[in-house]
Length: 193
Image 1 (tube, helix red, strand yellow):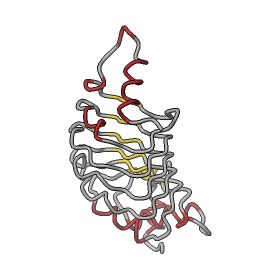
Image 2: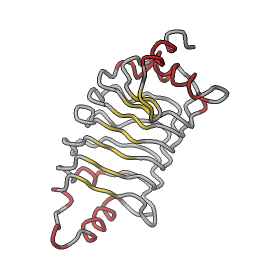
Image 3: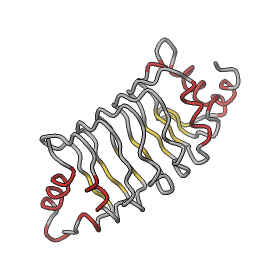
Image 4: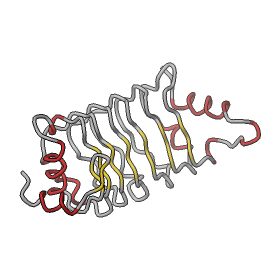
């Protein structure tokens, strides 16, 4: 398995000479699709002090960790891993605007409470079964764009029924599953389950 420290080193080595910037000073760091894959997040990620966008997608990460060194983080991409629960966002919640965490093993939407600036949550193709989980997002004042397709809670229902159910629980949304929320959808969501 590749460690985060090794992945950071490899990322620095791959930077073109004319634009070479140390990882600690880079605003965008992409450690995705490592071979062999990253199995766990570790403290070396905290060296990415200037990072605004961190991508760790398409690895084999099983758990999230606190990232106190990433004071500027706005976009965290953890899609296509093996993450079972959302955690470790306490330290980045004040700055995090987008969490891309589709294609994991997540069943519950706990752990997002610190993310007061969160605008985008892409969490499709996970294992969310209960609509009560979506209700937990209503306390995120800036959340406007969500992606839930591919979760078991959508099974046996039309996409429109699902979007209405999401909107009923989180009425401030502007985009659901890649489509803009219309006035018609708002009206239908009032009577949704």
